[in-house]
Length: 235
Image 1 (spheres, rainbow, N blue to C red):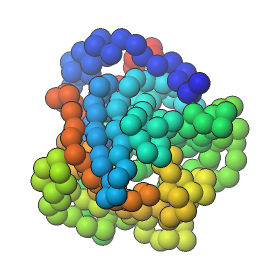
Image 2 (image 1 turned 90 degrees about the vertical axis):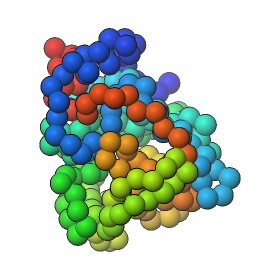
Image 3 (image 1 turned 60 degrees about the vertical axis):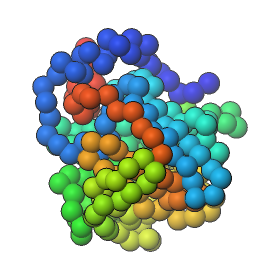
Image 4 (image 1 turned 180 degrees about the vertical axis):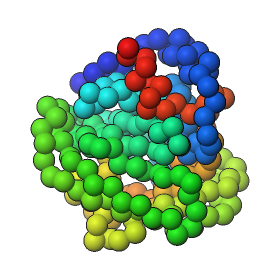
């Protein structure tokens, strides 16, 4: 059973709460609203769909859950996200429902995207890794990121203004589990790859077991859901 500690079933009610909240600063590099979905096809014959399915609690914090379906390598995967009030994208961990279920959580969360973002921007995150289930403390890891590219990217879903984010130093990629990305994606022995994000759309391309490109998406037209606003749902 997946680590869904307090998943919201009132999807419509939550969407209304978020829609009524004050507008926040752009960019929205990961629009977090229940029901948002992104579908990808790989450069070979692989595919994957990501959907924001609800909320959960990880390390005592309220987070949004992105579930992977129709996925060649990651169908048992879900990962956990929030966004800061400044637009930073924060990764809290992941859980894979296989081999009895396993995953990790990060405290503090990893800043997956830091804004404002421009070519040459770098940042580092030091985090305690906890194993899931059980939230058992383990190693401390250092993650270092850099914005490596900015321009127009044209996957099958359309043309988007995008940024590419990769690790600034390959010796400090901070991989939580060998063979898997820090967000839980299977890498089949590859190093942490680049990811391409577009303001208001989300992840439009990424390199994992092969290059995945966005082929379709559905984004609810409401503001970015922040960590603070998610936490307020639990008060």
